[in-house]
Length: 311
Image (cartoon, rainbow, N blue to C red; front, side):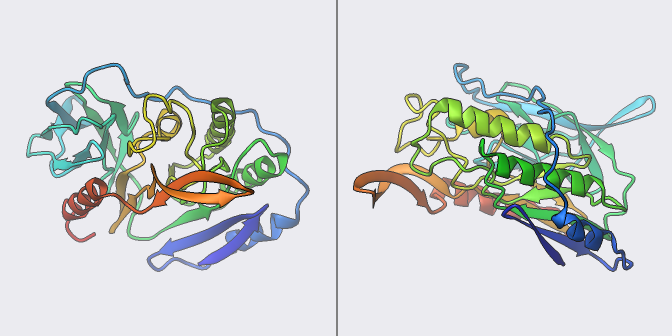
């Protein structure tokens, strides 16, 4: 494993299996001394959004399929979740799930050996389907990139650091399989003091730069990704408080995926429950409770129980 630092970001390249020696990572590290990165045009894509005003269906059904020439086949044993419970597809690739009243998305866990076609999550609906495609990559031996503390804001230094990171990752040979950013992704105020506009700007900067990556990337929420956006609808005390802006730009904050023999899980531990007050510069501020709540511990237990055999 190798480490580098780009403008305060910590990056680790992790190899799985027995890989041949390659100096591409060292070359990327040496480029840290390069001149500041030129700006990138923000690349923003249309992503699934929560349907806040639509009633939660009593049951969600669907199918996970793989396409082959002239044939559509169901994929069995694939986990599907609403962020509160996890079910698996049957021999035909079908599933049914009773969503939690607080759920906003249905998402699929990428199974090893497949890539998800289209979006890996969708807003709640009575029917939600997913399509997979067989992967041509050898998943027994691979390299992925782990980055943390990108702390993106409107600060030019944070943007330059992320741009440089994206360009260096895109220049690696052979390319890594994917990137995991374990947070903090952004630099929003933990006590939700920023405006919704500041939240939108930070998310747009982060998403618009990361979308230039030529490989898949996965995000894990940190306690600087919460925003006052929709605070009236999801007030303090509601475990969904401060999450809508994250959902609208990045999707579910609890999810998993598999690659090779590894089951990766994203867990968000920041909850604005009005239970943790800190005095800062003479002001008593509400900070997030940094403890995973019971309903999400239950989700995590189910997710791990449903992981593919051998992972």
